Amino acid sequence: MPKPRKPIYLRRHIMVKGDFVDLILQGKKTTTIRLGRVIPRYKEMIIHGGGKPIAKIKMKNVIVKKVNELTDEDAKKDGFPSVKELLRNLEDVYQTKISDDDLVTIIEFEVIQKFNELLPKDPYLGLEPADIARLAMRYLRKDLGRDDYRILEAVARRNSIRSVAIELFGNLRSRWRIRRVLRKALKMLIERGFLKHNLNRRD
Figure 1 (cartoon, rainbow, N blue to C red):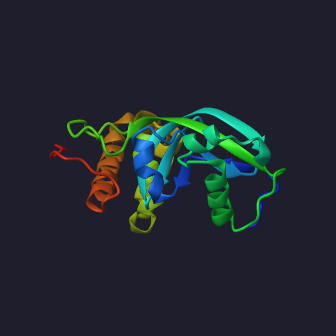
Figure 2: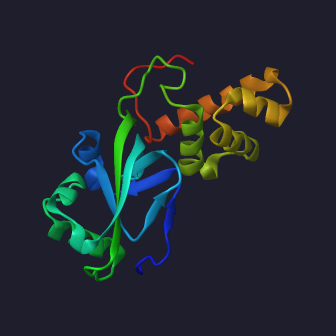
Figure 3: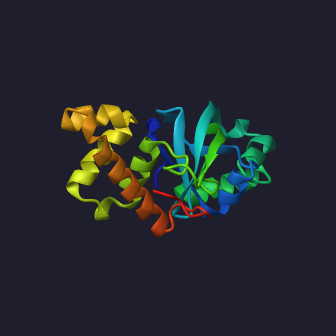
């Protein structure tokens, strides 16, 4: 992977190595450091690790530094014991030699919802409709029918069942169709192991 020359824009999803999942959920990893200038487009994002969504996070701060300005404290917040280990990992990920003058971006975040602590008694396990839609579009894309995908895409954009009902069907009476698609997508995400809950949920 070549060194990024232009700013990289992060959208709704951010990926980390599976090794970091527990550290994030335990609150021990509170940053992710990326090579180059990285710009998150949204304050809230879904973080993924080990092939699954693990949490919803909120951006707290974004700092751009040169490599030679990184400290061991920066490395520890990112889950590494030292800058040396952090840089070794970055070189492995990006498959390139990193110099002192290269830029890195420190993205500081906080976990606002853990996907291993969902609410079984809530109709959507405590998830926002838009988050269910975004996860389904990411993990179930090949299994979604065209009509279901169209509904989920609109929900991901608007995060409002009412607004989507009016946009797609021209009335509020059709909200049941959107809820049905969301429940179906949520059930599939659980059955395929992307989300978990411990108690039976009542539809």
